[in-house]
Length: 222
Image 1 (tube, one colour):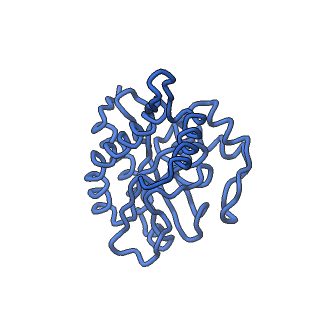
Image 2 (cartoon, one colour):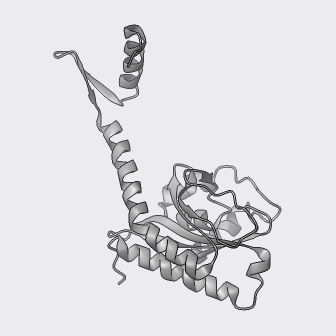
């Protein structure tokens, strides 16, 4: 590496303390721990998901002509896993691959919250729910009612809660075990959303593609 031996020793020692490496006293060698291997497998899993689902995200963008995203839960927030911008939108959204997004005031975030474990949902909802616009829902009771409705309807909606002038719909993506591992969404500026019948069309599309993506991952609907 070109680093001084003393610097390498300090780095290795810290990685051992953080459980990313293990040190064998007999051989005097360092080994990768299961914790670090777990991170690697997580990255590999997410890359595989993107490869499998990206073609469907492209089709969704072509059919909807909206900005389309796939997001996952990443600790206490969401994270964009794949983003395709609309060909025609003049409004540039701030979504980009790897960027975080709040869970309580985005359509994808509401989907991920609705299907996550009760313990994790409780931990997130009991924290501070910061408003991003004057339409952000930060009252826990109202948000919990929305999350229950997400399960019933099979999709979540956001109307200018995270970005003024932007509406968004999202649907869950399930894996072969029936676990919600991601969400797919479509976002558009308000003037497109107000076209008669557009809301119904977008909801139908995002639910349909959420199911198609789930089936690619081995999900079978009962």
